[in-house]
Structure formats: structure tokens, C-alpha cells
Image 1: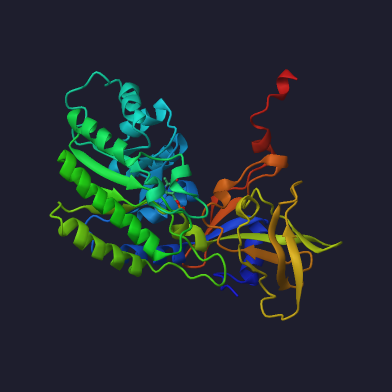
Image 2: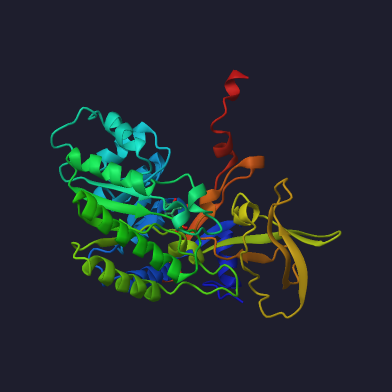
Amino acid sequence: MRKLPFDKAKLDEMSVKWPTPFHVYDAKAIRENAKRLRKAFAWNKGFREYFAVKATPNPHIMKLLKEFDFGSDCSSMAELELAERVGNVGESIMFTSNDTPAEEFRRAWELGAIVNLDDITHWDFMLTALGISGGAPGAFEGRVMCCRYNPGPLKGGNAIIGKPEEAKYGFTREQLFECYARMKAAGVTRFGLHTMVASNELDPNYIIDTAKMLFSLAGDLHDAIGIDFEFVNIGGGIGIPYRPDQKAMDFSAVGGGIKAAYEELVDGRGLKPIRLYMECGRCITGPYGYLVARVRHVKSTYRLYAGLDACMSNLMRPALYGAYHEIVVPGKEGSGVTSVYDVTGSLCENNDKFAIQRVLPVLEPGDYVVICDAGAHGHAMGFQYNGKLRSAELLLEEDGSVREIRRAETLDDYFATLDFGSL
Ligand SMILES: *Cc1c(COP(=O)(O)O)cnc(C)c1O
């Protein structure tokens, strides 16, 4: 049974002010995890994590992570704006977008972000968007340019992200050689190299192999084109143990494995020092966020159903991927008396289930049901289908105090984009 950073009494206190459902994040655990990550990569001078904003796009969480010098990995106008508002500008932003609109290239450039191109055609597209397609002396002064590599069949796939050759992202190897040569010819002097081939990956070797692949490629590009890479970015995708039989990835094992690869493939090859970047989201906040709901109805038909006051608009992963999330019933943890439930929401879609045929303590209306590992790709994936509103987000501070970091939506929010006046 998962240990929670709050008990039933604390939830009673919180729910007076913030009726369920709500998301709550554990600040202390997020900080401790951030420290572990930094320690595991401290051997690499300039190591940096760019938090994938899409995982938990809340400025208070981003600000907390900024204490550990985490930058922001952005892929949309709104995410660029969030980064700027928390003071992450310049090379504290990694702009890793795809199918990118011109105005986002302009905004990212204006903010001084590291622009990471998704395709070879985006080079010309970006130059046009920036109004420098005819060449502009000094336009790249101080600027670092990056490209996203898609290894295709050279790298085996993984469950959420699929096979690289079927993924819409990134350049082929041949395209990388061509694009970096064109960038160099245009006057770019600072370079980075990126890939993202994992999602919710729990095997440290997969991440270590990704780093090896990039170090080798950086060396090959150096030899062929005569450019040096300031950084390689191994992307995000480090997984978390959603299921009780899974094990968290040991950051220090990954850090150690990548260090050995670095010594062989960067130092051993005589390349200039390369900073290691990553842009994880899930493993940074995922295990430290909880969706807190209450049982609204218990229904016995062909199965036993526990209907919550939360639904898939608060946490879509189970419905979207069939994902497993641990469920804890505070106050009944040790009751020993169990039943088997489908734990549902109130959306008119039968896949609106947080758990299917789950053994849980006997549930009654009013019981708290805490859905674990909701801290990344949880609230963020929320939507308003079926007139469901997104819940509040709360931050549980180290001293036990609780702070609202996003209010719950209201019906006024839902209706705000409709013009009833012209009916
Ligand atoms: C989603 C995403 C990430 C973060 O992935 P996690 O699985 O949350 O670590 C990082 N980079 C890019 C480009 C992404 O699309």
C-alpha cells in the first residue's frame, strides 16, 4: 500500500476549503527528487534538466523546480509564456516543438530560447519567419541551434511513444548532416543535438543507450562537418513505477552509465566537453501528485461500481492508455475487508474508469479515494467534454501548509467563450 504525505484528518481539513476533487502536489518530495537527479549527473559540467512544461503546466510548480536550476522545455506559445512568467528566458528555455507555426518560432527567438528544429524544412521556414532568409550578418551571433534526431529502425520502440520509424518527430541521420552543414554555412557557431525516443521507460539501459547514440552521432557530425556540440539533450521519457511490482529508475545508475559512455565516446574520441541536457516531465512530478476524490455512489449491478466525484477530465491516462494508477482509501488502509470495484467517473463514456476490477477496502459514499501518480500528464490533460470542469491544484508545503496554485473552474469559465447575446 502506497504511503501518502497526508492522512484522512488532513483531507478533512483541506476539503472544507477545497471541495473534492482536487490535485495536490507534495513540495518536499518534489524537491528531494530534484536533488537526487542533480546529484546523479553532477559529474557532467553544465548538466541541466529542462522540465517538460506539458507534464504539469503550473507556474508554481515550475518556480519550485527553478530552485534547482531546472529550465523549461516548451512546445507551444502558452508554454513559452509560462516559462517567461517564471523567469525562465534565454537558454533556460528549450523549444522542442513539432509542426511549428511561424509565430512560435518568432516568439521563441525573441525570448532567446534554444530552438530545436523538428525537420529539415523548418530551417528555411524559420529563417523566413524571422525575416532573415536572405542571410543576415550576425543573425546567429551567440545563438545555439539544435536538431531533433529520429533514429528510425536503429532504435527499438517503447509502448507509449511507439516505434521511432512510425513517429512523426525528428530528422533522419542524413538530414542532420545536411542541416548542420547549412547552419554552419549560414554562420551558426553554437550547436546542440537532441532526441526523444522514450516514454515512461523504466529500463536504465534504454536511457544510457540513447545517450551513447547521441555522443557517437555528435562525434560523427564533428568529424564530417567540423562542428563542436555544446550539449546533447537525451529528451524525457524516464518512467515511474505506476504498478506496485515496478521499480523506480535509479537516477544514479543512469548517471553512472552515461558517465562511462561519455568517457569512452566524448573524452576518448577527443571531442570538446559536451553538456548533458534532459527534458523529463513524468519522473520529476508524476509520483508526487495525487488526485483526491470522494465516493459519490456505490452501485451493484453486474459488477460493483464506485462512482467518484472526479472523472476522466481530471485524469485521462486510464481511459486513454489503459494506464494503471494505484488507489488508496485514507482511513481504511488497514481495514482488511475488501471488495472488487470498477472505480468510475460521471462522464457519459464507459471508459471513464480509474480502475477496473480493483480489490479495494469496502467503499461507502463519502469515502476519500486517492489516485496516485497523478502529478504529471494528469491535470494537464484535462478537458471539458460533457460539461466537466477542471479541478483545483494545491501545493502541500514542507511545513504542512496548503496553498492553492490553481483554482477550480466554474460554470462561468465553461460559458466564457459562448456568445449568448447573439442568440
Ligand atoms: C512529452 C515530452 C517530454 C517529456 O516526457 P516525459 O515522459 O514526461 O518525461 C520531453 N520532451 C518532449 C519533446 C516531449 O514531447
